[in-house]
Length: 93
Image (cartoon, rainbow, N blue to C red; front, side):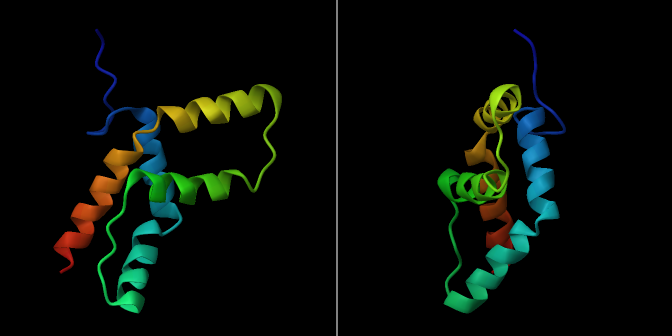
């Protein structure tokens, strides 16, 4: 069995998604949400996946490219990313 971890993440796709979320200032958006609501948000995999899905669905991917994008989305460990952001948010308290 091979080791598919990448830079401390489950796999390359999870690391890459995390890097792209940083580019979209996902963490800052969650901090703003916390300040607006007065409660620290707790993220789950659906929160993170939905955010990325909304970005991805702005484009029409069909055929081969659609298959590649869907394969990438299904390879990401969304729970790991959510846990990473939750840990960062807890440190902000």
